[in-house]
Image 1 (cartoon, rainbow, N blue to C red):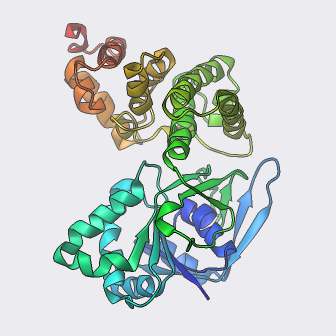
Image 2 (cartoon, one colour):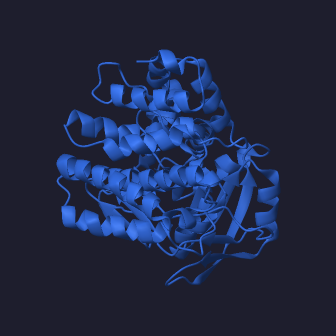
Length: 392
């Protein structure tokens, strides 16, 4: 039987990537550092993925086990060495910590075996490239010997997996919709068999369509919802003013996608409508706090707001609604989220220009810089920051 090793046994790993691999007939090995989660997975003979909303069904997963990469890295390396596929859902910043396990597995792999298919399934552009670069850097002189034992392919993944209900165990609640696009080129004619995934020649439009629509729209809904005091994303979208603000932001990102990739405007309009219906799914208990967390990361240069807004501004396209969404993100004040706490502290301690440059990574001469700086100043004025009054 074919084997897949998946790093990250959390809700996305079990409820999306691992599910599709399991349905593709792979013997599934999860790798994680959370000992209670690893133990819970190993204590279960099956788990259920509950799809909630229109068209949703329950899917049962069997044929899996879990390894603790912190306690038994050798077992993880052995599993990677014998695997056919390796995937991740750990977050882009964690890839550098799983790179040693994949490298160790490649070193043990039979050189005559078919190359290992490695795919990082993260909310980031070029995540698999990042993972490969980490492995290469850590391999040093050994890279040449092991590089031919793996094929690295970027992916674009999309499925809403909300915070899970208490007492769910290792079962996972998800939305029915999902998309997993994989770049075809690296595999040639030897593509891994993953039902439900589709292979594309040019992945960038799929990645950016997803990031600049789903991720931008989800976070925009959360930040405007937090301002309005609505607890969930679905409830936020039920407020007409918030729905209008989210729609306007996504119209701007769609205009960029048409300009940059030549995507069809009509198809993008249908895609936006689908996305908004997904967000409005009342059976997904997705809170604005969960979706809005880590605002500093989400305001960084190549993330869901500044990334598309910067390119749109460079192209002379409208960014009014995206800048308004940035303003809502600046107002995200959640004492339970460390980045939110840091964000509000920095708004009180830094002048608007310095804050804008350091958080967004924009150069002062960039056509978007002044617009964002003005939004920062407005937030500083609203909270009575002394430094804000001196900002341009």
